[in-house]
Image 1 (cartoon, rainbow, N blue to C red):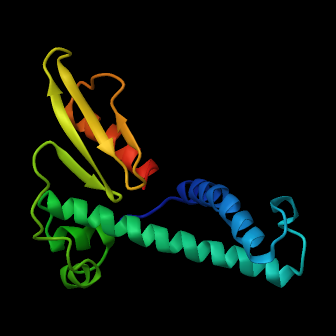
Image 2 (image 1 turned 90 degrees about the horizontal axis):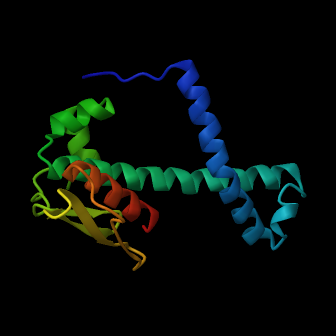
Length: 168
């Protein structure tokens, strides 16, 4: 198995980014739980405030697990094996099969389509623009399309995937 390590500098940047992402969620969770306005998030018993932050981390953990399963299923749909998934996650092939039982062996998405984050996108070659375009419907019902042509199918897929992630 390949072991992927994080440098201390990467860990510090990651912690800063995660805390920045967590703060608005923690504020919203505490506000809903207490009925206090968001600007009073840090008012209250220290244990209650800390428990609100812990609750927000639990929500973040659940979302990371969901996105991890989506990434595993996407890799599996493109032909990755359980051995490869396990190596990427630092676990055995059997561990990967147990963690993501539906990830491998699923039929790949039809050519020119993406199914991510509960939404779907179609990629089409635009001969006139000598590139690729995409149209998508997010899980929230929002629709989107490429503002312009992309030089490669992969770039169009990346933009479509970003749209789908934003409308999960």
